[in-house]
Image (cartoon, rainbow, N blue to C red; front, side):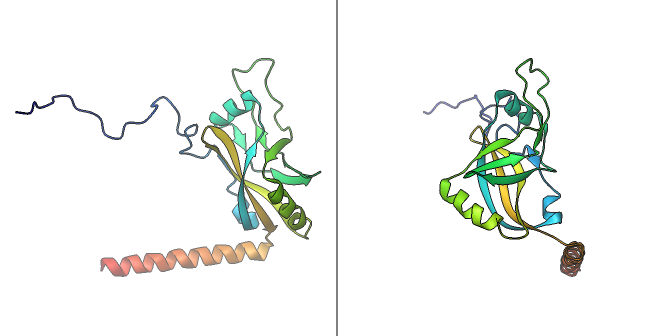
Length: 175
């Protein structure tokens, strides 16, 4: 006769319960929410970021801001400018500079594509979000075109019309 076990296991236990959701890659470290309001996002791609140790720890703590940041292709390399990462609280003399220019890691063929596209009138590189993937900091960049004021109004009009239509459909299903 088989012996019954009295030991109960917890289903779906996390690998490391002490690790934060940002560090484990479940939550974005920083999001540029105003980017989709100010720009038409044409193409998105992922890039690695060259950072120092205190910068990574500050990002894990949620101290990064992408609001005024932008990308630049210079001498065949991709750079991230104006990305604000606050100093790490427990960092000493080795703390990083807050608004330094950071190098982005992408393949050569992607850089070649971006050189031609960013030289077109009105196209720029905008960072959308900063996140962790397999323990490394990644940034999602987008090739974007700036919106005019009337474009922003039209987008808002469309969004409210879509939400009203969804609400009407939901109401008709309930009745």
